[in-house]
Length: 302
Image (cartoon, rainbow, N blue to C red):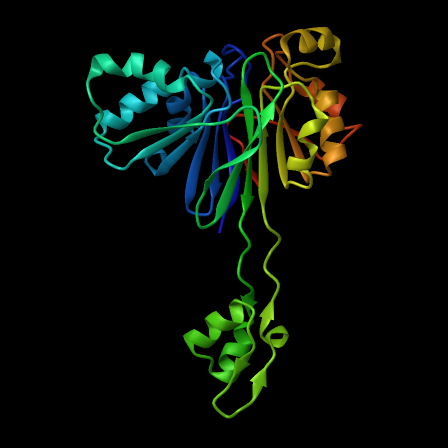
């Protein structure tokens, strides 16, 4: 099973120095989720061998162009390729009208397209399937913006393979043990669940917080997440710009990661003022050691 993040675009506002605007794909087991869709997203999918036909849900943080201008092209490409499976897009109010204006001249699509308006004023569950839940949380930015927190659902216990052979356990007995039950054998012996199973691996979680000012109000929602991607548009040399544009610095993101006790922090959404990115690590790592740069094409295991 896999739970991993691939960054497609990591720059803020405009493409620069070979970096594309924001977009990423989170793989949670057999499901692929697209987060934001900046300019060039579908090109990056091809560059990094992302199976775009497997994407059934797209989550948009806000309606600034560098987070949505890749969407019409992707939707048209799905149509040209004869997609039939439904596509669901979760976003703040206004995206449907924006996309409809661009799609209307091309006629109807070959697949059902569903828009889901996300509340930007309060935290709420916006999606769940058999493996994950997705929670939207309000962020502080110049227009209504949300972050998304993906959490893996509890897994069943792991059955000890040697116990299956030792006791010739049937499939119903294995399922019962994995769900936490004791198993009664035909000879009347009761096998305690603790001797048949091992705890499941720790659950994975991922928080996608961009664009935003650093804000402690998100702490209850991201506490202890395995992986946090947080806006680090600037370093302290442009702290005033960060405040003016309602973004964050690397230092502020690291402080938030430390308070939240996350497993790892990924920097991203870099201003085009920065050609070299090492300065972001220099600022963040003294505060939160397990900080890495967000880099396009990199796959981060959760």
